[in-house]
Amino acid sequence: MNNLFKNRDIFLLWVGQFISHIGDSIYMIALPWLILDFTGSKTSTALVTASTYLPTLIFGLFAGTIVDRFSRKAIMMISDLLRAITVILIPIFIIIGNQSTLIIGVVAFFLSTFGTLFYPARDSLIPSLVNSKDLPLVNSLISTSGQLSHLIAPLIAGLLVGVVGLTHLFTIDSITFIISFIFIHFIKIKSKNHTLNSNSYFNDFKSGLKYLKSAHEIRTLIFMTSTNNIFIMGPAIIGIPVYIVEVLKEDFTTLAILESSMALGMLCGSFIIIKFLKNISLIKILFFGILFDGITYSFLYFTELKFVVVLILFIHGIGIPMIVVSRTNIIQKLIPNKFRGRIFAMVNMSVLGTTAISSLLTGLYLEYFSSQSLFLIIGICAMSTVLIGFFSKELMSKSI
Image 1 (cartoon, rainbow, N blue to C red):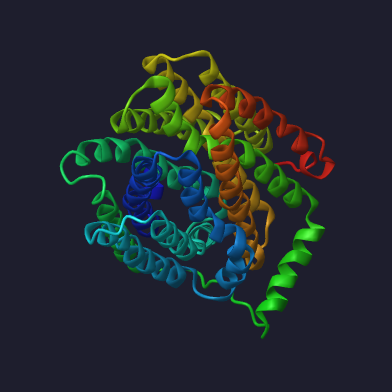
Image 2 (image 1 turned 45 degrees about the horizontal axis):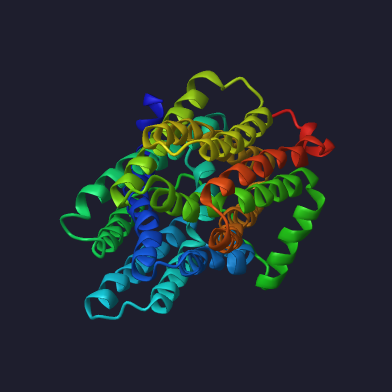
C-alpha cells in the first residue's frame, strides 16, 4: 500500500477524490433534508432526489462513448469545473429568496448531468496509471477515499450546519470540486488513453452495445446491479431521513451520526478486502456483499433505539465495499481498454440511473406505509438478487 502511495499520480487522484467526496457526501446528506425541511413532503423530496440521478439513466450510455473518445483526464477536469459552477447556484437562489423545489430540482439535474462523465472516466483512467497486478489494491484505495470522506463529511456537516447554516453546505461542495480540479490537473498519464477513430458517435455507441451483447457475464453483472439498486438505493437516500424523523424522532445531527457510522463500516470493509480477501474469488466476494447488504438493512425493522440503529448501519457499511470494489475489479479485468469507458458508463447508469426510479418508488411507498416496513421488505428483495448471478453459467465460470 505504501508503495502505491509513492505513485505520485495515484496519490494526487486519491487526495483529489477524498476532498471531492467530502463535498459530495455533504451535498447528498443536505439535499433531501433541505427539501424535506422546505416542504415536509416525502414525494417532493423523492422527486428532487430522483432528478439527481435521472441524467445517468438518460445520458449514461452516451457518456461512455465520450469517455472512450477523448482524454479521460480532461473529461474529469471539465466535469469538476462545471459541477462547481452549478452547485453554487443552490445557495444563490436561496439567498435571493427563491426556494422553489422546481429550481433546486433543475439545478440538481444539471449537476448530475455534468457528473455523469466523471466516474466512468476515472475508472477507465486508473489502469493507465498502474500495473494490472496492482489494480485490485488501487481500486480498494480509491474506494477508501470515498469511505473516509463519508465518515468525515457527515460530522463536518453536523458541525457546520450550526455555523454557516444548511444553505452554505452547498457552497462548501462547490469549493471541493475546484480543489479536485486542481489535483487532477497535476496527474501525468504514463500511457495514452485509447481514442476511437470512427467518425460517428452512433457507431461508437452501437459497437459498445454489440460488445455487451457478446459479453454475457457483463450483461448479467449489470442486470444484477440494476435490480439490486432498485431495492436498495431509494431507501438509503430517502428512507433513512424519514426513518430518523418518524421512528427515531431525531434531527439532522442524528442523520450525520448515522451516515458517519455507516461510512466507518465501509472503511472497515475496504481494509478487510485489502488484508484478508485478496485470495478469494471476486465473484464470491460480490455475492456475499449483496447478501450482507440486504440482510443488515432488514434489521432496521426490529428496532426504534438510536444506538442500535447506529450499530446496524455500521455493520451494514462493512458489506458495501465488497460489492463496489469487487464489481469494479471484475469489469477492469474482463473488459478491453477500448470498451472500458462505455461499459463503466453502463454500470454507472445501472447504479445511479436506477437510483432515480428507486427514490420515486420509495417516496410513493412512504406516503402510505411505514419506513420500518420498507427496510424489512427491501432487505429481503435485495438479498434475492444474488440469484441472478448465481444462475448465470457465464459469470460463474469466470476464474477471477
